[in-house]
Image 1 (tube, rainbow, N blue to C red):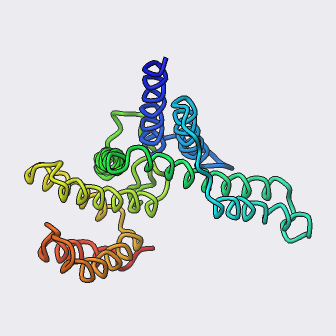
Image 2: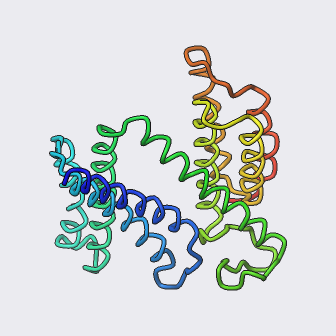
Length: 257
């Protein structure tokens, strides 16, 4: 029975991983809720992770601070009652997003207690995979190809590529998360040098294509962290790679938001 529970929980975790990946790759963006499909898949992934924990039949350790965070999610409801928010739907959606965020923190804490470093590796692989595929889609958009039809979102003539994320800043953020995750995999010797360099170049191309200041801000924050930690942690990332990030990305993105 325990072995069967373990298999079902792993299946739920695999489906959650795929949902997270698809949340960055789905091309449907329709008004008035342009990110509905992306948000739905991400929320479904969180619920699948929670389902996997329930199937595994572990005892949940609910910290006190989580209960306080859950109360924060009720602030939009209070704002609606007091007239600060005029529409009930806006208050409910804000409350739902906050609860989803806090649920994600709770689930991540429970997963870390079980899997520890394996959780970081799984998340890193998901980010690297999603960012790499999105880089190919951005190149596809930049080249003006149309062979994939509705599987890739359309961009305006001369517009900035954003893969299937609907917005260049979101695309740039995913590419930066992919770069950081790639660094983690390389630092832990989970990837060879040649493959890490190849994937890094693809992700850098995606960052440059986005022309987003989001990546520029992340680059400065990461450089500050690197300067702070480089003496206490044996980082394999050299100064040349950081200079390449700044030299290639920052001048190109200076004129764009």
